[in-house]
Image (cartoon, rainbow, N blue to C red; front, side, top):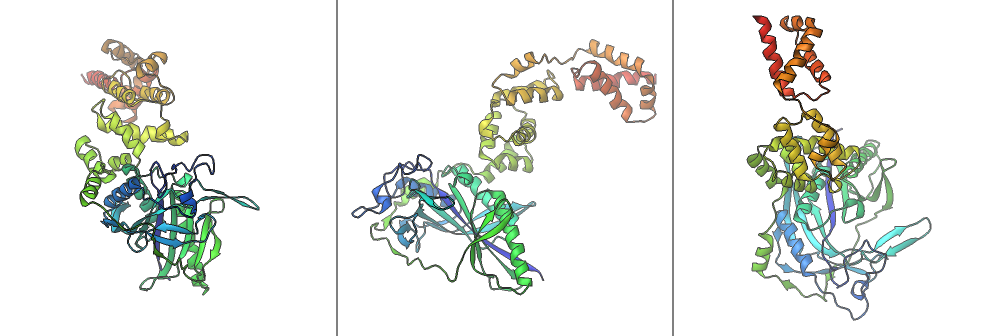
Amino acid sequence: MNFETVIGIEIHLQLKTKTKMFSPALNVSKEIPNTHVHPIDMGFPGTLPRVNKKAVELSLIACQALHCEIDDCLHFDRKNYFYADLPKGFQITQNERPIGKNGYITITIEGKEKEIGIERVHMEEDTAKQLHYSTFTLLDYNRCGVPLIEIVSKPHIRSGQEAAAYVEQLRNILLYLDVSDCKMEEGSLRCDVNVSIRPYGQKEFGTKVEIKNLNSISNVEKAIDYEVKRQKALYLKGQPIEMETRRFDEASKTTILMRKKTSAVDYKYFTEDNIMPIQLDKEWVKQVTSNLPELPHQKEIRYQKEYGLSSYDAKVLTSNKSMMLYFEQLVKFYHNYKIMANWVIVEMLGYLNKNNQTFEQIKMKPQELAQMVQYIDEGKISSKQAKDVFEHLMCSEKTVDEIIKELNIVQISDDHLLLEVIHAVFNEFPSSIEDYFAGKDRAFGFMIGQIMKKTKGQANPNKVNQLLRQELEKFKK
């Protein structure tokens, strides 16, 4: 039997504000636990919440970038939530009237684009952080009250691969907007996934299983792939798929039951009567939403037009904000955009992956990489020599000229010197000349290799290629 997977994703995103959503406490949840706590967030009697204007601004920016319909009248509700991580016993959120709805983003899977709908974007406050130990749990209320937006997708996602692409694209857009640092490993972007299956042709959705707090994009895909297999196995055995909340265990790469849901949770929403509806000034909303930075897909198009890059190279360069910023500095110093893009995508990414580093940790300044590429183009160093220079640049703050001097790198471009070496190779390997004229392609490469060997790799490859062919032609006469 063939099944269709139906996936919806909820993203909780902490906003980059100085203070919390409804209080003047600092938004510094990563500092010493319980050192930035305010009576408003704790729900002390007599306290009244105040809406953070910056949080509203960042929410509007996110809604605009996600192509949402924006509600310019803010309405807040109470979500009754009797857990220890919300001391006042309820969460201030938006239920009936989210700030944004009916949006979408576009993902690309194997060269094909797909639009994923966004049901809603609503503002709310975060809960306290729970630190679980073997026999007890501690609570850090620094996080309590931190501004959040929740981005709820429509059930348009059909595989773990699509889900990972959706989260990655959404995260990249939000990073470009600078509304959040989007650090999944630190909890500023948290991902909950709802997964169900149904036989192809069935209109009704299957029973939904929730997977909570996935902390990396790769884990999103792994968790969904496992959960789909688990649900299919149950269905084929005739066993019921129960409504559950599960977590992903990285060690076993399986989902594990946290709790069963006998029915939908009734949060008993009602209007937050301490915050009156706020009518946003239409001109202010227009001003906020019309000044968005250039987003990844816009940069992709510009890189292809302005720098002559391939679609693939443009997509890779814009897939990481830090890499994009490095490249945009790089192109200010030299004009060979394609070669510089190749060094960033192939050599730089390879080095960072090998050494488990990020673009933020790179020591090499963009102008030094540009200078190195210029030296290759001018024939001052070879591509092979450049790789040695590159390795040293990546782990030091020295200049290209300093490293070239230290490594004693000199490229031989003098015709007279190169001709001497070429004739020495002819004398040492006369049979290679015969092989060349006999049509054996490897003979030419062999002679190039011997020339490079004799010059310790310092011969100008382009010059060697040109002069060798020139000298070989003389044997025809």
